[in-house]
Figure 1 (cartoon, rainbow, N blue to C red):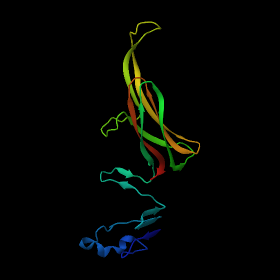
Figure 2 (figure 1 turned 180 degrees about the vertical axis):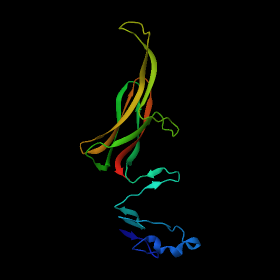
Figure 3 (figure 1 turned 90 degrees about the vertical axis):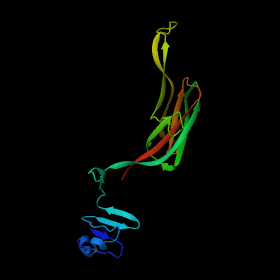
Amino acid sequence: MSFKENPPFKNPVGDPRSGMGSLQGSGQPAGFIEQLYISDGTVIIDDNGIQVTGGRISVTNPGGTVIIDGNSDMFRILATGTQSKATNTGDVQVTVNTALPGLGTFTSSPSHLHYIGLSTAASGDHFINYTSLARGWVAGSSGGSPTNPAVTPTIGAEASTYLDGSNNVNIITYVTNANAGAQTASIRYYILMQAAF
């Protein structure tokens, strides 16, 4: 066990509370920690931040909900950006690709999130995958009358990540425009990596 604190308050051995008796009450400096327990680990608090070795940091809010448990992994955002692709009726799986060599090389494609819409406005709709549908009528057989109701896609978009030949991350968006006229798909993406907190 070790305990390190900046001058003028030093209590390198024993219970850190033992050096605090004269600092309680109205004479206590602003921001002074009243209670600090350290056991079977190392905690260093200095101008470089907080370092915990052989233990964990856990945080519980006033309502009793654990915010940080010190055990779980999380997704860290490695990169974020936008894409856009202008399309017109008849475009099938046209693509827009963004290479991200600045992230370094990977052995497998990382996870990602993306949001797709037909508006760049902050108030515009954003979807995980975008598909616009239209109701129409089709014939039951070749040459027959179009009397059967049908739902057909007018425009759709989806995105995925992959590794190129240099093992760099790329994110690619596919857009298909069946009969929606001139439309531009707008994409916001986040490249993620699972990491310890």
